[in-house]
Image 1 (cartoon, one colour):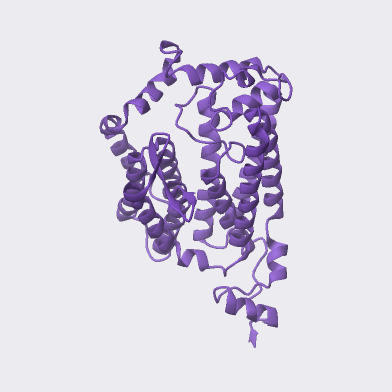
Image 2 (cartoon, helix red, strand yellow):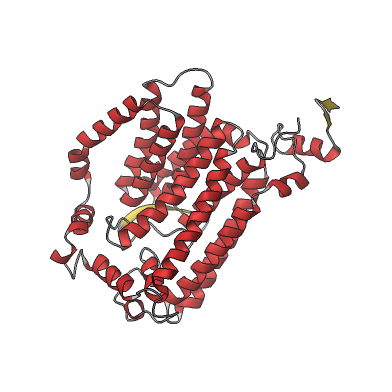
Length: 392
């Protein structure tokens, strides 16, 4: 059989039959085209995170929690490889709406069969494992919005309905997530959704109109927040008014970061963390541990590593083969970048404390695996990028 200039080999035919029907890439080509530089950067970042986590936990639990985090990252690497290497070029676009619908159903199911932990109902217990649908929604929303704008822009000019429908797709899951309550994840869902809408090419008149409506609805949104969420926002500006209560986290975090100086106090040498002054030091405030022990230079080195990963994923977006690939790559990049920005912003006192983990460094499973899924989808887009060209 001959298509254009290239004969399909036996391995290519097998790929067509077993992996979605439209991919001409053999397994050898998939491995060659896989963005191994991104894979390596993630391994380096996670390795740095293991070192920081070991110090942050301290005591007898550091080895146990460290091995658990390493196991989660190992599972995440497998997820990234599977999502990146499997399937034809259009396989994920084809099922984007289905993924969104299933995730939304799981999100709704949390209110009926969810597991309560730390005062919030956010998890579903499935086969002995805890699943957090709100984390999956970050990725599902990006893929569904990318599919919507890809289909619309291919046939017609974007109009007002292309603002209204995506707003509903964003608002519905965000409302359910807020109800759990989980302000941080809801903010992430809204933020990445907004990025997709802007990059998709909506007119600035529509965007300004949406911002105006959002600003006008702020008083209503403020009244819908829980008391502790409102305290977090007001504490951002006046933490000293309640130094032993709502302002305690931010004050202790600033002390830890400031005491690190330029070069830090050395590994395992942080007094704020190891004397238990710094709360949530292995999750939300793990950057404070890094800054205290490794100083300004250590913090900048970590930011440089984050910057390299963001740059690499943006390169994938610029080389994507179609509009869907561009939007998905940008969305996944913004998800990663926003989590870095919000976490570091809140530990240095520039943003409210909303419970956003530091990617690949904070202890936890749901956020880590979600980001590995995001990287897997970006890697898959890289296989079919303009940079590699097409053989048929």
